Length: 346
Image 1: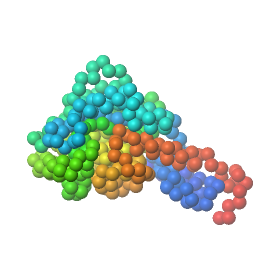
Image 2: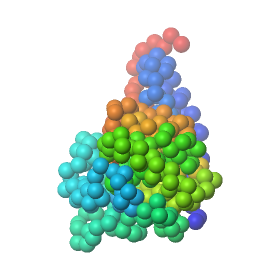
Image 3: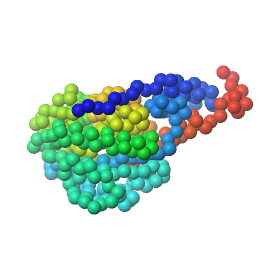
Image 4: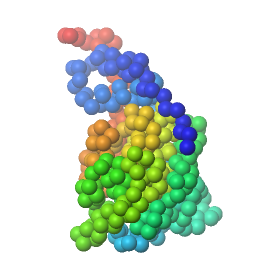
């Protein structure tokens, strides 16, 4: 598969942003990570004083065959039900997106349900969910590539319509199982160190989930040096789609705000497939899912928030929009010492 070329970070813009931070009416470095974030965003966008006017969250939805093994507290039917909830503006991500002035795009990339005639949904179904990875690969390599391409094309279409800051979210019962499997293989960590309770399973179900993942990895033998092989064998369609969104956005200098564990897994996959995307990632928050921090460690990213979230959908990423907005407004709107007539002892 041929991926789009990812431009290098614009050093000139980030340098100009850093220099401006040094002239603003505050002690140097006193706004901490907000200063660092604004400088990073300048480099990503190629704008010394970046501002974001059209923010959106792309929510990819898909089902997982591994649910048949009892790894989730909820049945697969909930995936389709939640998709309809998103479309009716009734989910947490809808509420938070409204607050942040962002739009929500919901994509059926692999839900085991016929949404024929449902308005507002982006119909990009590759298959009716993944296969049971305990019995064989979750997807074919061709399906994984097709899902990646969906994400690339979809986000670039939105960028053509003005999208300049994107968050990624997901819905898919069973997707923490796929995410734990991918994370274990790509980080080399033991399965039990990257597997959490997902939708809220008890101790016995958690142990079963760990064993199922271990068996699926042994059976499919994904190649840790080939992220596409890992994605196809133990992943999911929505994870592949989100990895495509990351690649497609980075190719157009649009920052990607990464949400929870599943979105983080997509970022891990994208960074393995196309390492040049890493500078375009913003880590929104640290989930209570134990594999999430392993992903941030692997990517060398530090999350902006730690609120004990474990919902997904893009909720933490949309919350981080407010932090990003604050960082860029401070860089752009604060007066310099000269403009304000304030003495700078330095």
